[in-house]
Image (cartoon, rainbow, N blue to C red):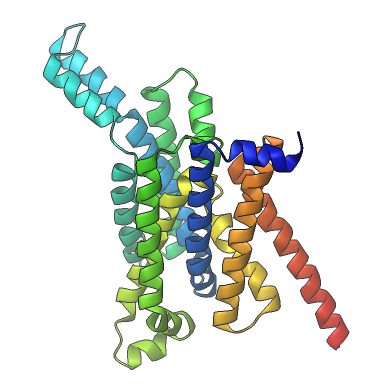
Length: 311
């Protein structure tokens, strides 16, 4: 069977099509905001929030087990009551995003506010939040395991190994709605985001509430990170946001050109990574990030060559 026939065969399955759609949308959203994060030196926020998302995902996964264990311990019985079993089943069937998204959004606001605190600088706040979230998340998964294979659960959450291939239709629709919201927010506030990105002091002097737009950037970053959890996992999210922007900056200089090039690179690498992972049975997230890394190296070489040729 040729590679084309193999792809045609796999794309007949809905979960493969779902993964492809979600991967493209997430990559597009990540590339749009990545340019702003890099230029504003806000990349650390993406890294910190990705670790927070891991802790929130661990909480969402272990919450039914926690409720069940404490309910049994409190009642002193060997079996849950029908009412309590219904509560456990409800939390077990709850979409992870309904827990991960609010927690990540709240931490995005706290991280931005704490980073502006004179007593706790931005890098220290990120270090505390990211390391603390990782520690709490791993402790929860070990203390209240939802499955016997704890290492597999941790690996899947950190690197997004196969979770992208287990998406349901409602997950896809939720991702589409959130992606459209991110793109709409970016386009609607494009001029203000551009202004805040390049000259925040002038923006404040002109009467624009720059702090509100910084908060908006942090909130949208949190949305993107929650979306990207299933694609590349919490440890690789920063690469998905930063690499396309850095690659585009090797060649282009204007803000709009960098954004367009970053979007093209991100979408192309996502499509390429998903296809290669299907054909070669490699982890989806790692394959996409490796593709982004390869493009960055290629663009860096082109930039160096063009610079030498001009000189």
